[in-house]
Length: 423
Image (tube, rainbow, N blue to C red; front, top):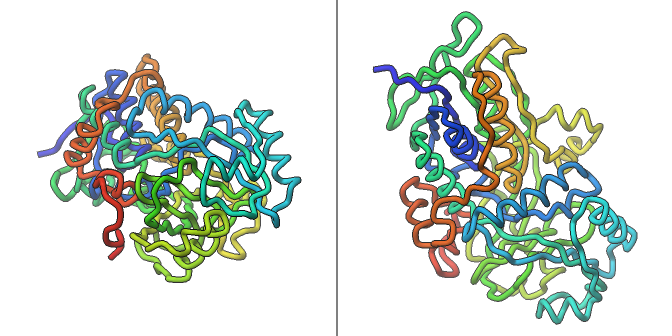
């Protein structure tokens, strides 16, 4: 029996569920399908940093503004899906002081509030911080708990009438007379879904999904390792104030810190090596910020794959691909309407950051509504997520949508330690 919906969203990460919530809140009939549990891809395997935008003021100023604006929005709507840790950009003795000064000036230009403190005050705020820290810049970073965020967003979509199917992989996309005619979905759906519009929000897998409709979306995924180390009471996020490199972020959780990350190009987002040197590199580099992590037990490791859109790199004129390090690719997002390639009613949203997922979803929903002739504005920037201030209810949503992910498993479990997520 063929099912019908107005919009089918493929992909249950933050952007996909955010798009479903945004459209459903505008009164659109929406169905979302995800091949695994929600947050099973990049979203749930991130380091979970709520960016202030400071990291991007020099490389992507527009993206930095998006980050600080969405940072404030998520703090107002997401409750206990967010940890209000604050953050420090720290300059070590060997780091370029001019880079610190440029970073601080860029933050001022982009409306990101900062305060500069010397090394002694930084160590008072963060006991255990390296003696090599000469000064630090206080920024409004935070922590995202992706499992809770995605599950609560899905619950919000369902509250507005959306249908959410997990463990429902897309097997095929039929195109007839230049338009998407139906999507074959396996797993728990095991049926064909006909929709007026299909959104490909599959992240690093966007190329594979688009290819099912005969469309080329060129992705350049990169893997990155995250290492959870037993360490209580860190306080703020720590960022190394230098050009982005391996091991320059330490994200606090309740009884652990997450060290991140590498950036290595991969051909297949489902099949890549998980190499021990990456774990060793994280511990070694992050120990320059917080020396004790080199002596603490590694509680868990997990890898994620970034959904980077390859043409963005070419447009920016970077040459990082020669080394396999794709840090030069923009972290901005791109919305591709495939009508230009002969497939009406089909679009892909690629790139972006977890911090800006709601903005990406709003832009995608705007585009779909324009295509469908729906005259309704987004409300997601002001409507709180269901259960936002109730951790038990949030974790019940995680169970309901099978959204448990390694990025915040220690927080949800209320314990430190545990097996590696990839064991």
